[in-house]
Image 1 (cartoon, helix red, strand yellow):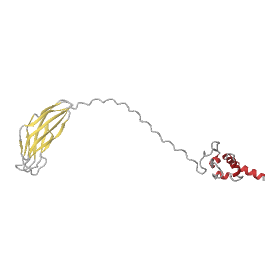
Image 2 (cartoon, rainbow, N blue to C red):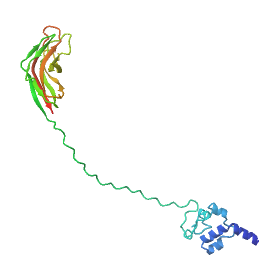
Image 3 (cartoon, one colour):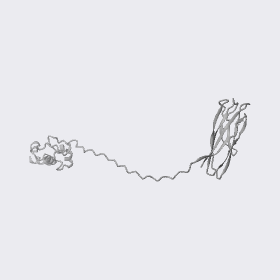
Image 4 (cartoon, one colour):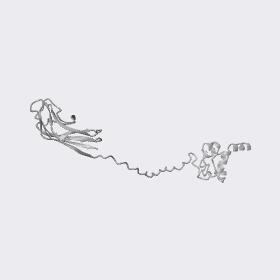
Length: 246
């Protein structure tokens, strides 16, 4: 009988020590727990209940892995026997403060002078009739100007055109402006409305900067490719400006 009791205690010594510590050696332990009522197997699977541990302050995992301390044995300091307690939620991460603004950079250098001016004005000296099937010169005055090296000159303007009553077998009629004898830009000579008068713009063209001072001369003519008699254009109020950029 004594050998069996000693063997039983030996095999359940961890359980007895833990239970006695948990119950604080009270009379509850002496009265409620009889030898063999709580085994190591019960402790290992977390089967210790409120009935067997009055304070419910020790869970099975603590007993099995040997982490029970004196502080743990105070009532309410360990988690529920089955699940364990959750830790408190972590705090929200802080946000770095915005750094100070950097210094203002130095001001950039001033841009180049972009001034422009009209350096020549060429005007028609008279109204001109341009008959069918021919190219007719349109005289202008003040069509000569000087271009300095490094300057870009623009040619622009407008012209008033009287359209014929009809234009047979033709298209592409136009007023041509020549610079130094070479075609440079134009204004369309329309055929509609018939026997009407229209103001047409001259397409802007550039005379690129020369390497040395250069004198230019402007001339004008109208090319009429209509094929029948009476299909003539009238030219008046030709205005051409030369604009200098430097």
